[in-house]
Amino acid sequence: MSRELKRNVLLIMCDELRPDFLHAYGADFIPTPNIDALAENGVVFDNAITASTVCAPARMSFFTGRNVSGHDAWTNNIPPKAGCEVLPERLNNAGYMTAAVGLYDHYPNDYDYGYRYRKIALPGFDGCEYTKYIREKHPEQVGFFPNSVGYFKYSEEEYYDRWSADRAIEFIESYTKTGKAPNGAVPETENAPFFLYCGFECPHIPLTPPKEVAGTVDEENVPMPLIQERPDEDIPSVELYRRAFLNPTEVVLDQHSMDEERKRDRVLYCEMIVEVDNLV
Image (cartoon, rainbow, N blue to C red; front, top):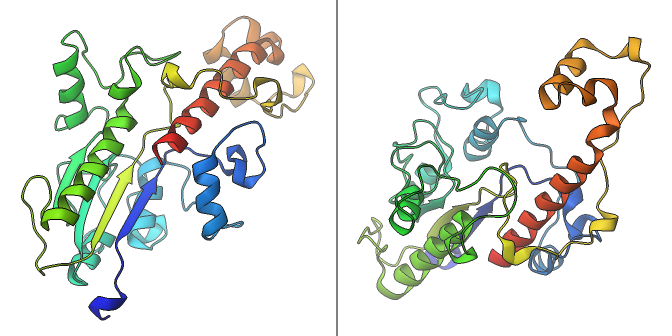
């Protein structure tokens, strides 16, 4: 491919984002004007199905072009089998400058998979640079997530996906102005186009959107999950265990007893999508 035909590529990937909660796919209860603009001016896939329902295997399928059986990273915290070429490695060979910021869910997490520049935000990873950042801001913070439910306890400027978006902007500005990543990393070929992967945690649990997006969703029209009514004696044992885990007394007896909590969680989920749209 000639240099003139190569374009800069920005890949934005969310975690646990369902299409029927995007305005571009008909969800009129949630405003996503920036994602809508991408859909209107780009390509929308109406029949794209993930290769796995688990985070890391799905990502590895995306980055290798293989089914899970082809790369063998069948669950989280499992590396792909030897010989699996991943997208940044291939793009390096094609003359790109490769970079990754934000949520990076490829095991082992300290392996760069060919990226020449990385700034990682990944819960539970010792090398997570967002965790270091938030601890410097708030020494009392002990983990990646400040709280496990409700609104993010700090300002939106310190939100984990805001941090990732800022790192993406930082890379683009640095590379387009100087030909170098913020840490000085350079491609093998001068004036190479860039491939930048930006991973967002949202709207993955915990459901903790920044409070700045509170009230942006049409709560009355947020759909509730479909619940199939069954006679008590016809409830599968796995469903009984699930209900007991959620709420030992009420849920086993009445599956609608969780409706208020389900509604709250769905609204928070929607507001996290609004935050993603703001960052886009």
